[in-house]
Amino acid sequence: MINSENDVLTVEELMEVLYIGRNYAYKILNSGDLKAFRVGRKWRIPRLCIEEYIIKNSKYNIL
Image (tube, rainbow, N blue to C red):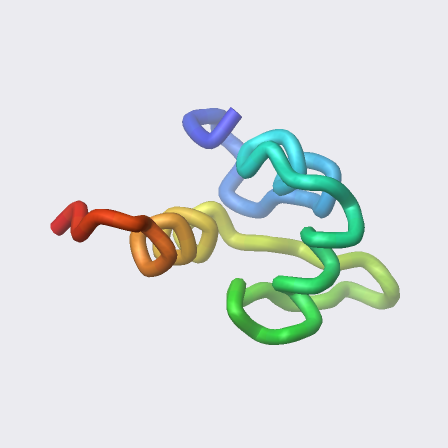
């Protein structure tokens, strides 16, 4: 999913990529831990921001 052509994902796609539930997805979006933006009432999450979030929250330093 993360290698798809879409550069901007929805909350549902975020849930699939990170294997998380809806409540946790909204928790990290509302807290600002995961950089994203809103279009009206819908969240949009840039793919690069998801990759940064994964690296930042990884147990081991990837880079």
